[in-house]
Length: 494
Image (cartoon, rainbow, N blue to C red; front, side, top):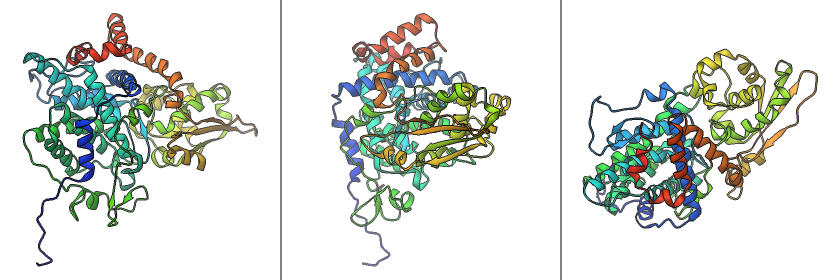
């Protein structure tokens, strides 16, 4: 046979795709901790979306593509009056969730925000629940939504454990698209072949570059990229359920597959297959590990690698607030991932640039004793030049132990330390914070604060009576799980 002729034997679906499909089709979520955490995650995620509606740069993206469109049994966008097709509703919900960089986080070889998948999950579940009731069938329950959240978290998070997409320049929203595709296809009734087809198309898609997250091109796309990814998951699930064939060797096909085209750079975080082809793998069985260990952003709307630096800065605020003009230098001791992602010098061009700058996110609480979303806006930045003056005095130092324990499975710390030195030779103590309040190790301390955050975010859109009704329901695991999805979503309609 000529060497120039392709061998056209159609392969089985790649093993990773089969593992994901079998997981979502057969796994039963039995972990009470996972379901309880999913309930808290639901509260926090929806609250973040409601808070984002205060920002016109977010709300300009929302609503139907054609004004006046009427969608029977359409999916609602919480905090608004929009009733949209599930694909656009997933986009809008996902956009609001991610806009302020305030929802949950997963940190490993790859980073990300697994609750971004709620955009697709809630849009599909709301639509299907309404449709089922109209057809005389039982509504979908919120237990189904919580289970789908656990599965989406698991898919995104386990892939991220040992596989670094950022090191080859790809953005973590790839994993949102893959996870949303899987769980939304399951919600929509996909069989195994349809699920595999949908997943294969998620990888065939050209993947987002990280360009929009890094200097000098950081911008607001990072605030809607996850909404775009979760909505694409809904669209791909729909395409597969219409009978579209899949691409079985999407990952492993020589020359044309995902690994050879997009994953072929030297990458110490990637596993080597026996034939030395670069590949990624699932490092542990898919279950409920990720939801049980997910990180909540409770105190600050800030990129997670800086959360502990912000907390340290708040601690130091009383010691420095009256001596800001006496500061000689500020030393931030951190871990390698923070340096790679969010350490920046020079002009910060926009709010999205500032909330991914560890120097900015440390300077603001040093000066003001807190960090809130409005403090990233252009007007605030322009009114307080002291922030940039402090940034210019900052030194970033890597602590090898912080870097090592960031990746250790029994720790997963996100440590930072801050120390301020003055012109007269004096200094503050070095304040070290190894685990943020939203970490599993501080869960008991964090959940009451998470509930307060949710209630405050509810109050930005709803009257007190509605706030109390939603809050009471969301704190009651059994009542929430039993509630029909479409009735739950109706509580959030303006």
